[in-house]
Image (tube, rainbow, N blue to C red; front, side):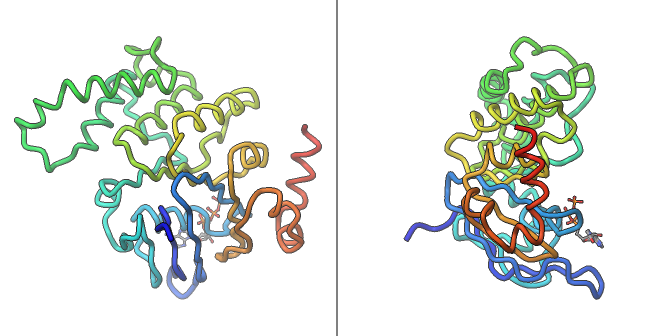
Length: 256
Ligand SMILES: Nc1ncnc2c1ncn2[C@@H]1O[C@H](COP(=O)(O)OP(=O)(O)OP(=O)(O)O)[C@@H](O)[C@H]1O
């Protein structure tokens, strides 16, 4: 049996006396695209914070390619091959597109590198930054300061920075939040392109995005995973419909 790219085992997190994540188990195969959905306050962001190392779980395990990562620091987890972008844009506004990407590449090379090795790697980093710029379709904006990009371009840049280090597992928190419908559509295609062959988890509210992007959907309700299955099966799941999805699906269908 192949080892899952990412696995949660009976994961729990309490804040004070309140248990917010209440025993989540999930196995994501390498290359799968997963959308994590659920009502406000269900625990989706907390789950991402547990996976990416921002919070340590109260109990349970997180495994990346079979290796325990729970309790490790975010940068350690990043260097093991898991990269996360945030709801809030995480770019350097006063640096150009190219410089932002190069920073992402250099940062991912990390402190293990001596200064001399760092200098030797600059050419590689430049080349990688050029590649990334092409992938996120911002070649023509190479020397524009990030602050002067459109919102959608900034989000694309952020995805470029997120994948800069070559992580194989990518977490995106509401990547299309705040975008217009047409921007969203283009952006989903971009996300699909730049994550080919990678394992992707997204937190998402927009059902159009969810059904356009995900191989599988994990439905989080009140800190538990109510369902984890292919989109059509989740759509048809009675418990999910009752607890959450019904009105969203109706909305999404009405909009198509
Ligand atoms: N650091 C914290 N301390 C205390 N409570 C927290 C903390 N972080 C999150 N919570 C609580 O945990 C619950 C789940 O929050 P979380 O942000 O994970 O939900 P969510 O599903 O991501 O919601 P949304 O869709 O609104 O972003 C909420 O009740 C929130 O108030």
